Image 1 (tube, protein in one colour):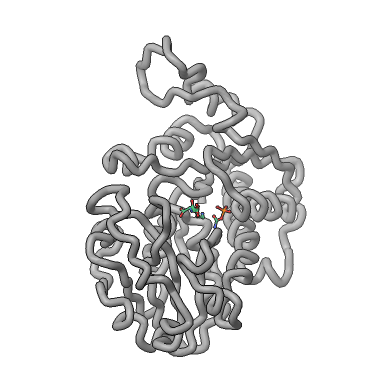
Image 2 (image 1 turned 180 degrees about the vertical axis):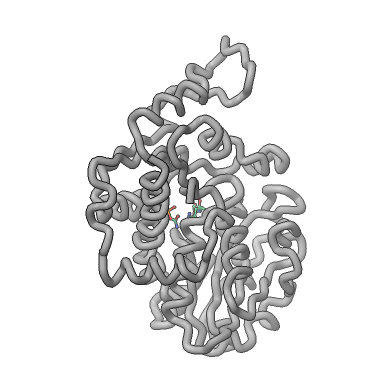
Length: 318
Ligand SMILES: NCCC[C@H](NC(=O)CCC(=O)O)C(=O)O
Ligand SMILES: NC(=O)OP(=O)(O)O
């Protein structure tokens, strides 16, 4: 693996899931990253991604540098040929070229603006890092995807599945703020690469990008979709069609104890942070069906297997 920008950078998905779960039980790569540095740049807040990726790097023996690039760095210009006489002090070309000398792997978080669909779909920040970096680049959640989260989700389902082909439901839930489609996009991509019976439930107007969901069955009736589910992934996202908009409060879509009864005693996943009693009810989050803490724990090992593959590839090429 040269970079980890999207799930498609993983060649053998099943093998990667297995390797991630093996690392959880037995850290066989504790020295692989000795003398190497991971640099992480955050343009948005984070708890899990920041700390689990730092931990993963340290489990591989790497040094880690973290920067809140939105607050502490110079305002970056991304446009080619820009005349920089306004508020942007540094061009991405210099910034990334410099970072590539300090770091052996660069990881970046940059959420979408959710105002201009075309612009967000260009995923300019992460793509620019990839373009100008001379070292591998990792996506810590970009405008269109959150592939470290999706690998974690796939590992968690694999770890917990009791049947060969479980039913997995991705359901939309309400939220007071407009959120990215990045997490559901990458989760859909992950489910397409697993042997699962996968469906999506969301209100009308919230259908995800057709290029991502492909031929996945979409229910606009949540109760119908939840029937016999073995895993329910609850997540809010803003509208893709009416781009970035909140179309309805949709409180009837909150994942409650009553909704839980429609499922096959399903395990409930969420990437966190979760708004209690808006997205998922206390009765569910505080029940044994909720696996959100185990899921967040797996973030470390998803990050570890990705960093391991990037280090191995760099080692082969040096
Ligand atoms: N990576 C975890 C999710 C990050 C982001 N959630 C948020 O911004 C929630 C913040 C809030 O609840 O106000 C999202 O949905 O993509
Ligand atoms: N799930 C996730 O990415 O969490 P953070 O936003 O806290 O990193």
